[in-house]
Image 1 (cartoon, one colour):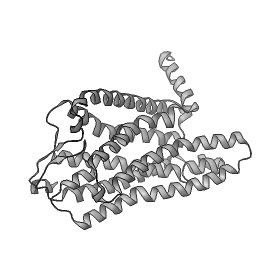
Image 2 (tube, one colour):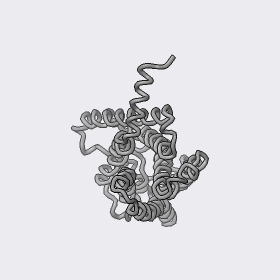
Image 3 (tube, helix red, strand yellow):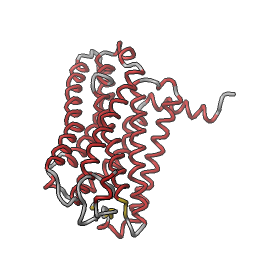
Image 4 (cartoon, helix red, strand yellow):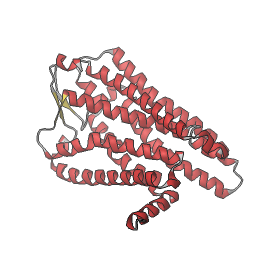
Length: 315
């Protein structure tokens, strides 16, 4: 963190919701309720998956890890945002901003790689196209290895990106037109930009977003081809419903992230970015548990069993 002493800017001021000054108390109430609901549903999902042996399968293992990721990255952003909605001085230290960016990018990139792993031949494709070998190919070691690989890639990308951004000089404005330390709004405040830094960040964005998305598309082309060969309409419907929830989450996640991180810097719009960022930092974590687990019959049965065991514990 040696670069902190080389800058004149010691803290940043968040201006993300400054244009909505009269609505900030209402926004606080709404975002707090959404955050508590998101936190509660993710805790329920993780607890149910851990407690019910019927859910000790690769699919639910990955869903539990995704819930952990979402719980952590909302914790990194939303509590600070809620406090800022109630106070006059909405600041974060230079070092705190770097830590927030690194943590958010680490969890977001790991989430992106894990979504790709779930769609590829390791989870959805194996389960639908080769169901008889599913439990053999997707052993516990393979699942843990995929999560570890996703985290290792996420850590590397976030470390390189954060280092490149915060090695730039910040001598002028410290007013950040956003509600957390994201790459584009912080880069905009840098006194000058290295073309090499911007190119590396763009290439990393392609690595995190475009390549996993292409792998997901290839995987789903093969999956749909396999589903169409299923003789019974009931079997096809079940297979399509298995993929539908994943596709919805993939579309929202990669769509919002690509708009934010892969467009030309000249197209940067603070108000537009704030709105898009609210969708993937607050709304997407709210809907993901419902899309993935809470509408799943198998999970709802496990949740009822867990509630019964909690209410009437066996002595």
